[in-house]
Length: 254
Image (cartoon, rainbow, N blue to C red; front, side, top):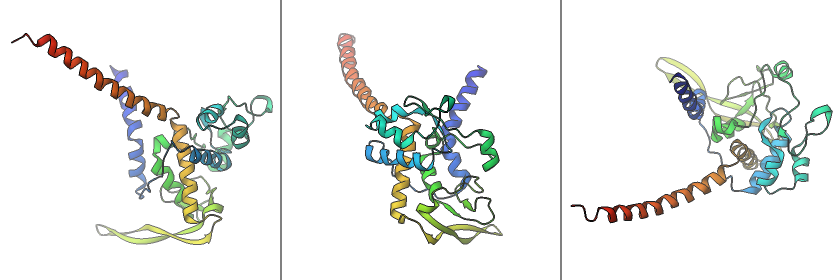
């Protein structure tokens, strides 16, 4: 009985994690443009993940050849796009390997002050909107070791690796009264240095990246949803036969 209660508690905690993450930051979350049926978007997202995330963050529940199959890519293209790590004895990772990184937890703690999280389930645990808004909301903060802070994840240890694309922005504050206490809160951002992408292009770039992260969090979700409709259709037809059989059995009962 105790084990069942622990299991139920853990399941409830996982389901509530996106809501907890939203509530803890207090920041407005932007709607992420997610469409896991868009293979072009997923392929662009895979490239973005390989270029900017995969050097530090593993996705150790995912295999390279699964990405090749699902995204309709050649294994050679996936190898060029994503396989940057080394396997046993320094040899390049194989196409059937899990997406692990060579960065150790000790090195991450020395460099960033904390272990670097695995991104396999990040979009599922935090929510796609949270990840999308988080990557939009970095701002310049000279008091932080990395020179950046984030309104969604205050005092985050991660540097803003996409700043060359987004550019630099500073927060614009507003005064909000909480009872008799005046509190300065971030109202928006002011661009102080342009990036290589426009705001619309950067948002599209992030949309593709987060779309890919949603995909790797549950690669089977397209098949699951398709199977769900088929199961529902089967149950509807089965209900019709079952109801007709029930009427046949009970027609002589008064």
